Length: 90
Image (tube, rainbow, N blue to C red):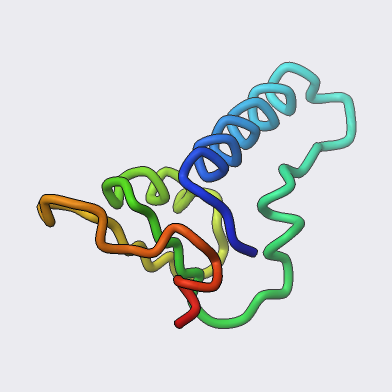
């Protein structure tokens, strides 16, 4: 799965919304956010690359079952990571 930082923020927001819904509807079947469904059964570390600071993808860590490795531009003075999925995979 490959996505931009706005997608990462969107995944996190949807996760918070799902968690809130589950708390407010305890009698209903628990909902699962898309990010958990998409990564279900994935093996190895989860690598998140961002042209923003590492804190952006790190916001997903509390809900992921695998080890999250983040690559970001913290203190680099500029964007060092390709902004396409093809560039990231090189």
